[in-house]
Image (cartoon, rainbow, N blue to C red; front, side):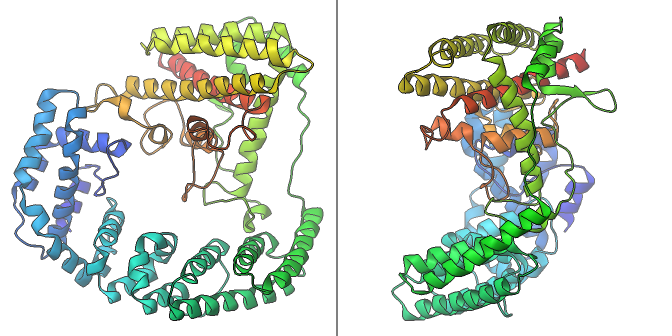
Amino acid sequence: MAVLDDLKEKKISFSLTYFGKKDFDTSYTIKTLIDNYTYFMNLVSRHLENINSMDDYVRWLINNKILNLEGCIPLIIDDDNQKLIRNLITRIGKNQSKLIGDIVKFINHNILDIFEYDSFDLHEATLNLIKNYQNGINKSTFELLFKKKRAYFLYNFDEFSKTFKNNIDLLRKLIYNDKPLNLDDSAITVQIINICSIISNYQDKNYIDLSNRVIKDIYQKYQILVEDNLNGNRPFELSDIGKALLNFFKSKKDSRANKIKDINKKLDKDISNYVLKHGVEIKQMIPVEKILTNWISQTNPAIRMLSLTHHKNEKKIIESSLSIEDTPNSLMDIFASNIPTDDYYTLIRQQTIESIASIGNALFIGILQKEKYYTTYFNDFLSVLSLVTKELNFDSDILEEGRMLVINVSMLIKNVIEKEKPQMTLQKTLSYNIEILCSALIESLLREQYRVKNEQVMYINYSNVTLGSLLNPDMNANGPFSKDHLLTLAYFLINSGENNDIGHNYRNKLAHLFNVYKSSLSLSTVCLLMYLLTDVLNTIYAGLLDYE
């Protein structure tokens, strides 16, 4: 694969997948094309007449990625740079779309060769093409992909439902994978149950029969596993499967729901016994008053601010307490639970994140209880915010938004915290104002930090960068935030994890007023988000100190 080898040799980073106008990768793709304009102009000038080789296929994908950038041209800052991207698009010409048939044919004939090379997002680009042109993909191609990417097709069942609805044998192969069904992976099993729930509503007896057969198979194996679970080997993992089966049977008014309830009760008892024997939850006493007494005794405002969120590590480097590096393996991570996890956000990592954040949360609750504490904090906060804004030439609106935050927190203290019977609507209103301001300020600070670090190499307006991109360590590595730090912030602010189902998603819930009135508008959430904002500000300030 000469083209990809050539990119690798020249150390040109280029994803073959187009992720959308607002994704970080798009701005980096534009930068890459401009910085390596001669190389890419020579590449796209070799017009493709047909797709006969892997190099032809890769070149088509590169061309396709570049063509997708046409809508981004107005976002490019410099007119000359706009012209460069427009020149590449023009040079590719209109022949690209005429080769779709060749592309589909090539995928069908060479799917194994394509998946031998896992680099430059080649797999993802290919899967996107298969999704878009699935009507032309052979059954044999899907079957080969199921062996390599079974989880992808299970979790993207809805997007391939048309294909599966027309080919029950293909769906059967996806579910069974040419071998007896096992329950080793609880997440996969739960997804299969979800698929059975969907196909059981098809107006086709064959799909209903398949659903019934699969559910019966899972149900029987689940029963056996629970009965064999006397020593508590897999209680947490099996619990998710039990809940999914119960929901399925309830939705179908199936009498097996009663039996599953009994089995699940037995499993709950196994879980309780496991917790009693091994322990799961770590509780800690936080000496808030002692910590705050030491905190306020410090005379330097900047050091006082930093001490709320940062510490010196073994190398005497100032780092955030939220920069949580490798968490130790734990028995807890052997088992699954009803809490979504992935390889990074393991159960023990999530509990560590929550534990550290709870300390910061408690400190800010303590700060808001006493006038000497909160007046000191307000002064320090605005002082550091003003210094950072001035020294790094941040948008001046950030400082005014910081003052708005202080005013709203002061109103919360006077009208809610210091009142014996505060009015509930006022409390919720002020809590919302503070939480949304904290979220907005965090995003603004991260965006300005990104701009300052990258403005010399940016070719696209930084205002289009999303919070998800700013918290993506692969996209925002050039700054004072470590990978673990960014992923911890992401855990609280947005949907995180491989399936975007991990974390609190506070920022998006607040922005869209999604289920926030009862669950998020509280003193606890106010203080957590104030802690996160202080952490982000302090990290940028600490980076400024290192720079100086």
